[in-house]
Length: 400
Image (tube, rainbow, N blue to C red; front, side):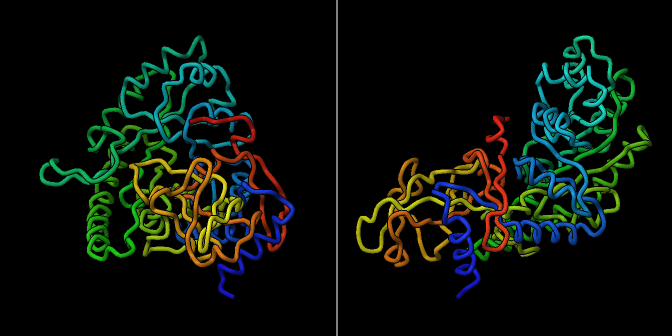
């Protein structure tokens, strides 16, 4: 029996009393992935990206482990909810225009002490000030550095379009604007190198493309390490009490941790290991989060149909954004239909061994987004579901 076949047998036994559709997290794999992130971070604390988990119970689990410290959140409303729930040291990774949220933040000492908000423009300070509604608590802020690699005098850009702050001088200017502004405290710098951390460098069947990605990423790492160090020096000259410099992502943990200027690493997807993380040479994780759909039809030889499963991930539309049938091994989509809203035909010889009511296990393309489809995660240890915990959706929250 292959390791994947053994996993399928475990998952089927553990959930035999549960009807699909359902979602699981294999805690043995989850914990092993957490250990691997800590190992690759080489002594620097890992801040957990909540958008890649979207489950309070699992955030609590991973933050209880040595090597993890703090949360990187994705909306201000989520940040405030987590802070009210008892989480501390929450870094909001994206600028916000949530005026009601800023009013709440500025009025509550506990929330203001727990949450750090992201800015990359003086207009963000203006918006926060205009939203205070009498609240006088100082707001903790972090500056975001644009990590993109610019070539040919800026005519070619590699990387996500995030912050407009690219040079040390630009970040130092904004740091001075914060320092001059009453009611704000500059505490950190963040830089997410998505073109390194979030792009696989071993694309199946594409050796030339894979080599080109590796060359690009090597050049981007060298350029960013030098520029990030200069940025940190420039900002510390303005704010010597800077508390943290955050960088990285699941795909670049060990490279980012090697930079002296970086004090902590951000990662989250590496806990669940969705299918987009199969194409990396730098690490190998264990798939921990899966969902099951029930077989509801047997249209013919080599074909079964499962209920639903059309759960595409965010990003540029393409085959790599689709979930994949994972267990039993050997199933594939009908290219004329793909994963459907209500029904999904699956082809392949394993279909002939599946009966009505059997489960087919899938992996989502991206971590966290699976939790927007399910209100609970069944936590499996060995052959047993040991707990069932709500996702954000299960607690009545859909922040995005």
